[in-house]
Length: 282
Image (spheres, rainbow, N blue to C red):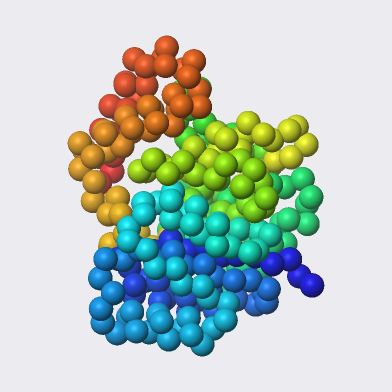
């Protein structure tokens, strides 16, 4: 029998987008998978909620878990605790798999017995081309899904390239072996934003030189940046972003790399730069 996978979807106040995602997930060609929905919306009235319940009733692969708002990491942990698949695949409610082979491509990668987890490529709003200039691609490839010396993350998840041995897994279009996620200790639930990195720091502590996490150009996922709702991160102001970055320093970086607190002035300078950059880009 094919390896069983669990697709874990965190959803918060985006029922229309969630229904669109389920339409795509239900047409996946891979057979042996379940869909765990960690639903935390604050308004369950209307046709969308009725349709969601109807879909769950008619599709045995779907497990709908209803909670009051948990926050990102706790919602992810609840999904893991209710999953029965060997491979855990994560996707957010405002994203869409690029093809009907999305689940299959995630599972296929684990034919490599040394692969612990990986992130697949992100496509922004259906723009499938590589957005990076050729002259910067070597730098981006070197930094993709890795950390700076201050332990701030680099992403560059739109690269069309396979990279073995990265340092962290993105929160969406990523997968991991369930036993390794549990062994690492899952995600710290007191982290409001950027919770991927508490898990990454713990996972990196237990990886040996033979096991690895990767970045891969397949499977691809469409990130729909025009979808409203959720945790409303796209509507942060500068103060919110500053607090978010400062919180990341104290609750994530210094928790797992205590010695780096000596670099606090450099962290503050980086936080200010990131906040200004956030303002310019938004």
